[in-house]
Amino acid sequence: LATNETQVLNDSCENAQKLSTGSFVTGSTVGTGSNRSSNVIGLIQCAGDIFESDTPGLWYSYEADTARVLKLSTCSEETNFPNRISVFSATEDCSKLACVRTSTDEDTDCSYGNSTQVEIRTSAGNRYAIFVHDQDSDNSGEFGFSIQDNSAPPNGTSCDAAVELPYNTTVQG
Image (cartoon, rainbow, N blue to C red; front, side, top):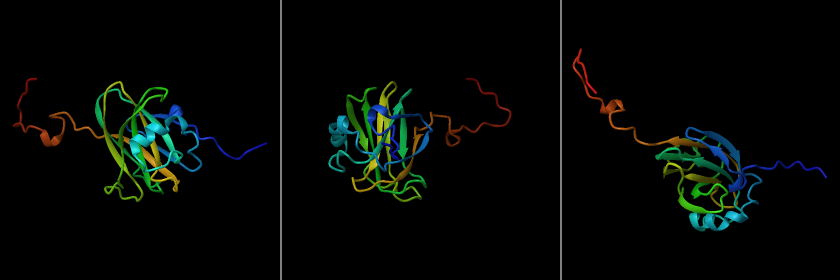
């Protein structure tokens, strides 16, 4: 018996697609939502009653190589449905999920509709499981998702903090 359905590989936390800082991916929540039985408790504890356990969504993972502030966003022309981003500290096999943060509002800084964003502070060596999902279980669609470093530059590395020097001055250090 043949089927036209395509299996979505990152429909469960255990099969999350690995991303890094600067990543941009597109995805679709259409037809997802059936592989969440092992993560239901953690998901509901992180997001409250915002959505049901079988809410469509895709999983991504991020391994923090250093402490930084990350901006996770669905601000993209590809995003066409109301969505949320839930972030968990997670073991490699996703057997333990601890809520870090969930987006709750539309991203008002984004020129595209239906987008959301969340900022998190990472710790070096930690693994994060990121669930991009419907705002509720009645919506599905396509989205663009990005991970950006939103950390402040170290002191003295931005032009605004530059020290003006007279012409032909030698600086030590």
